[in-house]
Amino acid sequence: MSSAPLSILQEVFGYGAFRGHQAEIVEHVCAGGDALVLMPTGGGKSLCYQVPAIARQRAGHGVTVVVSPLIALMHDQVGALEEVGVHAAFLNSTLSFEEAQQIERDLMNGRLTLLYAAPERVTTPRFLAQMDSLHQRGLLGLFAIDEAHCVSQWGHDFRSEYLGLSVLHERYASVPRIALTATADEHTRADIIERLQLGEARVFISSFDRPNIRYTIVEKDEPRRQLLRFLRDEHEGEAGVVYCQSRKKVEETAAWLNDEGIAALPYHAGLDAAVRQKHQDRFLREEGLVMVATIAFGMGIDKPDVRFVAHLDLPKNIESYYQETGRAGRDGEPAEAWMTYGLADVVNQRRMIDDSPAGDEFKRVQRTKLDALLALAEAHDCRRVRLLDYFGEASAPCGNCDNCLNPPATWDATEAARKALSCIYRFQQAGREWGPRSFGAVHLIDVLRGKRTDKVAQYQHERLTTFGIGADLSEQQWRSVLRQLIALGHVVAEGEFSTLALTESARSVLKGGETMLLRVPAEAPKRGRLSRGKAGSAKGKTAPADLDAAAQQRFAALKAWRAEVAREHNLPAYVVFHDATLAEMARQQPGSLAALGEVSGVGAKKLEAYGQEILRVLAAEAV
Image (cartoon, rainbow, N blue to C red; front, side, top):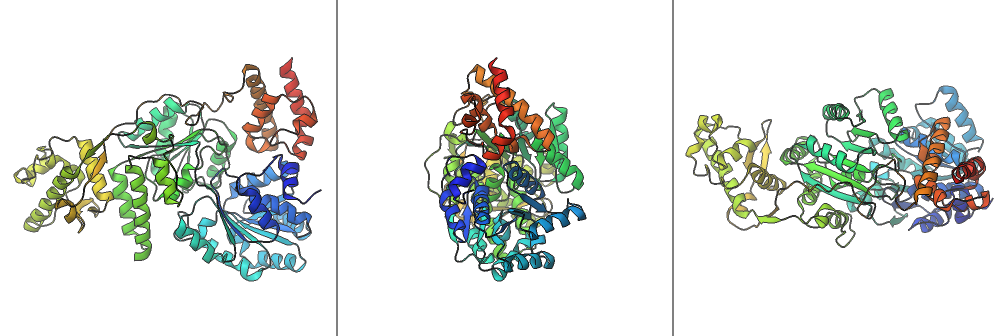
C-alpha cells in the first residue's frame, strides 16, 4: 500500500483529487510540520488530518491522536473510518471498563491508526504516560486538535480544558500538530497560536464563503408564525435546526412544532444525557427531523443534508452565527440560514455582557463583536459581503442573500431618532424631580405616538413636550428606531425593567451630528419553495433535479438499500455513502465493479464490501 497522500485519498476515500488547500496542508503535515487550519464547515477539514494519519502510520510513525470535545462526533468519525477500512477507535465515557482496556491494548500494540479522545482525558497522567511510552518507541505520529477555537477566551465556545493542551508541545516537541477550526477571527487566531504554542506552525486560511447558503434576516413580528411559514413554504419535510436562547423556549417551541404537524425534537444541556443522545442519534439517522436546540447542540455534527438553520434569538457574535449557520448544507447543496430578531434581543445580549463577571477588557471585546453582528442584522447591503469582511475576506455582492434578492427600502430616521432621544431625556428630567421611575420601550413608544394609557395618565406624561410628536410613525417603525439607537450605543436599557437611559454619545445625534439611515421594516416576501439553483433547496426526500426519471428511480432504490445497511451497522446513512455519491451511481449506472470504483466517494474497502450489492440494486432497476 502506498503512503503517498493522493494514493491514499483515491484508494481509501474514493476521491480523485484534493480540494482547495487540502493538498498543501496534507503534504506539510505528512512531512512533520505543524499547521493551523481554518476551513469552513463542509470544506473537508477531517481529511486534512486523516490522510496524514494513514500516511504517517504506513511510513512507520505510529498513531494519530485526535483531540475532540464531542462524543457524537467521535462515534461518527470512527464509524466512517472503519467503513473505509481504517482502524480507528475512541476513548470516552460511553465505553465500559473492559472496552476501554481493549482499546488501550490496541493503542499500545500499534494496532490503531487514529484514536479520538476528549481534551480532559488527553491531559490526564494515565493518558500522558501511555503517550510517553509510544513516543519513546517512535509510535506517536501526529496530534490533531479539532475545534481549536475552544482554546480561546475570545472565541464563541471557550472550554477551559483546552488550555491544558499546550502540554503536547512541551512534552512531545518532535511530534507534529495540526489544529483545525471553522470559525476564528484575527483576534481568536492569535489566541489559538499563543495558547497551543503554534508559533512555528504554517497557517492555512481557506475562503470563509459558503456560497450554497442563503442568508435571510427578518425583524421579529410574531416569530412563531414567521418560523412556521418559513418551514411550511420552503422546507417542508426537510432536516434542519432551530436555535433558541433558553431551555424553556427550546421545549416550548419543539412541542408547538409537533402540535403543528412538524416532527421536532428538543435538545439542551438540562435534558438527561440519555435523552440528549437519543435525540441526537434520531436526528442523524432519520430524515426530515427538526432539532430545536440551545447552542449545546451542533458543534461537530457531520449530518450533510441539513437544509436550514433558523435562529429565533440573536446569537452573541458573528463567530457563533457563522458556526451555527454553517451546519446547513455541508453536502454543498442549497441551504438557508434564517434568523428573526428584535429589540428585546439587542437589550438581552447587551445586558448579558454588562452583567457578566468578566473583566473590562473581555467585556469591551464582546461588545465589539456584538456590534458587528448587529450591523450585519441591520444592514441593507449584501449580508455575505459584511459576513466575509468580518473574517478579513473581501468579496462582491453575492446575489444569494435576502438583501441582494429583494433590496430593502430605506428611510432617513435621523429626525425620528432625535425625537426618541429627546423623550428619554424628558423622562430622566422628570425622574430627577419626582424620583427615579422605570420607563421602558413600550411606554416610550406610547408617549411618542400620543397614546393615553394608564401609565401615561399616572405620570402625567401627556404634559411632556414630546407627547404625540411621533404619531406619524407606527409602533414597528419606532421599535426599529429604538433598536438601532441601542445597537449603536446611544441608549442603554438598564436594570430588571429595562429602563431606558441616554449615553454620552447620544449628544451627537441630538445635535444633528449623525445621520441614521434605516431599513423600512417589512416582512420578507413570500417566495415559495426555493429553486434547485444557486439560491435554492429542494425537499430532502427527493432526488437531485438534474437526474432524469429513470435515474431518480435508481437513486431512490439506492437510498432504500443504504438505509437498510445503515440500520444494520447502526450508523447514520451518510456514513455509508453520501447522497452525492448515490446520485452519481444513479446517473452513471455502472455495470461492473471497475466502473463502480471510478465513482467519486467509492474507495477500495467500500467497493469490496458493497460493490456487488450496489450492482444488484442498479441491475434490478434496469429491468
